[in-house]
Length: 64
Image (cartoon, rainbow, N blue to C red; front, side, top):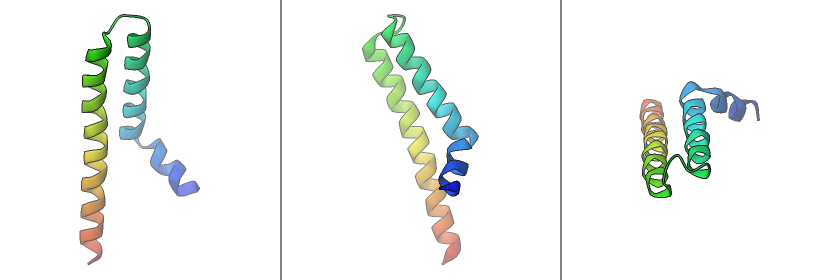
């Protein structure tokens, strides 16, 4: 549980969550079109999970 909390607090995770919340709010109040939200959200999530995947690959490669 502690390890999961530590990972959650990392800056990249915080930035990803904040951007998601901000764009969702802007979409709800009509400042951003839903189509634009999906595009931005996809880029944010792809970047986040791409960097997480790359980090895991580097960690697994260092163990071998």
